[in-house]
Length: 329
Image (tube, rainbow, N blue to C red; front, side, top):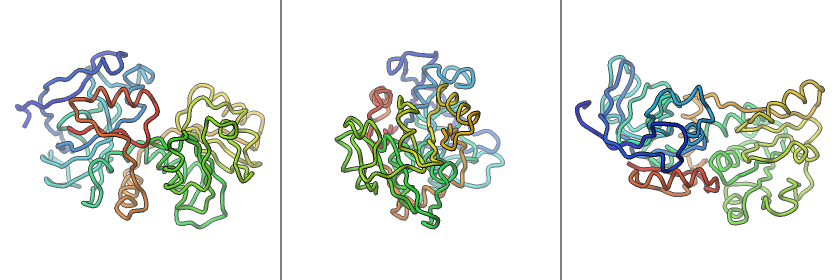
């Protein structure tokens, strides 16, 4: 298929935001050894996509210019490269592509099978494409960092989830409620009812005084905070934490690491834990199965055709999406 061309979105330098994205016709990739070729049905955007474009993750990402951005996709396998054994032509899958090489904002993408899982008919392409980065991040924060068992066993924990209507936050609320938890959540006023519908026990408008102070309406102290917001100081979290409470920061910056080290050096029982998402196919498969069972849903903020990918990109940069932003080829 490599002689044929496909429509793709790419950028060829750092910076530029939505206007730095170019619509191009490029050759359909040929799957290398152990790779498959996907006809893409949906891609979802994550903040890391535009942070890579902005140059915030250099020199690691992107691997090279020009870059076709986005990593979270759903599609159908149309060609199988030599050595690829897990899937066959015609299989529908959800995939986390490499942040190094991207490839999601296009009609086709090649990928190895490492972070590829089957997508059952009950899970739409858009619902599946929402899951990889945001869903795995939420799953890792809830199960590993906060130590919540999703079978509902264990002692009840009080959890706070900030920015609970965003990509990671809306999955975190639903996953936390599969465990033995009391969930307090913060979001904007327009999303309070949505976040309650996802299972949160109490919801704070982050612009109200109590919401800004992160105070639980029922007076609880938090055993763990899944912090999906930016710009909240440690001094705001600290008085709301239980004796051994921890703040799990899903988008750590330099000050997160400074606080993390200070708490370690002072032997504080309260801690800040920077979370670096480690992709696992088993986690992605588990999440897809939860969607199939009706125990987890992808809230879709908006869908954009690839011809209007700039609008989706601008919406992601704006930072007020409810759930996931989807681009469809």
